Image (cartoon, rainbow, N blue to C red; front, side, top):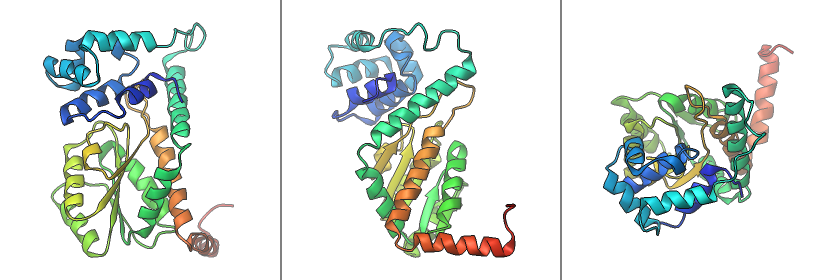
Length: 278
């Protein structure tokens, strides 16, 4: 198992029934995993947008006497600082190294392929298949939908919010959709949380790719597979969510008996049209 700060926090939270406020704290801690052992309860409360007593109750819910005991535990399990790992690296190199660690953690998560395989079957069986991603996650949704359309007969991209979003979910459901795929990345738009709640109320199964298992969308997802984002630059980096999207495409293709034939047919049409430069 990965020894990254984020991975250790995920393991610490697993198995605990957390309230929505506590999930928010957990999500904020995972996002700032390297800094958390050095934050006061007031600083963590400000980071998560909750009250300081909520942080104390959160620590108690995890089995500690209070927040100081939780912070002490996090400092004790933190690995020793490496003299060579990041010393001398500039901020760009450090951002790349952080993404490599995110990908390593994703690889370890995929050692149990059953969640991805289940997701692949759900996506393959939904006709049509709505794919949702707003703001920062819109590029992830669009990339998935572009490739999925080569093997799936009816993919519907939902990458714009507004009052029409619920209408488009309704239309997909009336057309026979059984599953909605969502890409949810920070900062999490309120509209995405509301859309997932609406989709589930309409009878859709929600499969979500999110930056952590404690993201705000977790409570409205039937199957959530986490893939961390990098936070070392001015704008988040999302290599792991992108790769997880491709893994889900592979799992969906495995569950579609005519996927290979569809790809071959596309290649034939593309050659006839001279679509690509050889």
